[in-house]
Image (tube, rainbow, N blue to C red; front, top):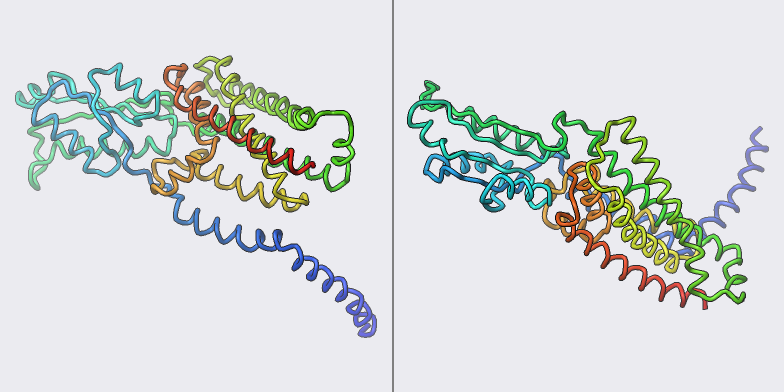
Length: 374
């Protein structure tokens, strides 16, 4: 038995030594294996936060008194909300939430001060973007704290100035997580299909030698590139349609906005993601390298885009890093259209950014792809 084990060991060790030598020669793969986990651990360890603070809030102060300003300051002192500006009326405040420039709106009616002086229950309303249940819980807790503080007088807690801050969750009154998560899955699926699978498919052609065979055919280079990426775009639209149907009928995800607008804007995101996948394919030579490089891009897009964790809770450097990925803006678009019924007037900044990403990435990738097949 010992002799047999010795024979097997003598056969295994040369193979192991050969693999280690091969790994040492493939410096790109070795570097990604070591550096990618370390970089992502440090990045996500500092960037990911589940406690939401400093939600941007607009104030509609129709009372315009010292008492109304004290109420607003009391809400902001909790640290969960921060002043993002003022609005002239309820409609303007709601539109700010729809656009995403604000996550909450404090509405103080004209009779607020008079009710306090007459020892009546003074009411105010806090509108919350409840599409993200995790972020909305912070605003709800601020309203509760403000209402309780309004009844405190020293240590006796005598209700000489009763105060009622009423919370109205918008877009997702029941605070159901699937309503927020399911639209985000569209962006994740498109990212996986367009970026990782596209890059690996092109690299697989290069490994098998079929890409060089296609290059010498009469097919023009641009036709070759389109022929490789257009089928994945069609697959992406099919995936999107399946998620929309299942999300609506299984998880009761609302479809409040224009579906043609959503499908039209999605084309910019698909083009940008295809361009990134094509760009990755020009940087690597093997499918393993393509997978590792795609993983390096995909993990930040999932964790820093707002798909799982609210961006309002992230430090500034993580917000800036997340802003470098097209999916961050696409998630704002898809959730705005589906959950808020947002039109082009509310999402046009994100649409322009997605269009810029599409033009820049597909142009850069086309140039790189032309050089890589020469």
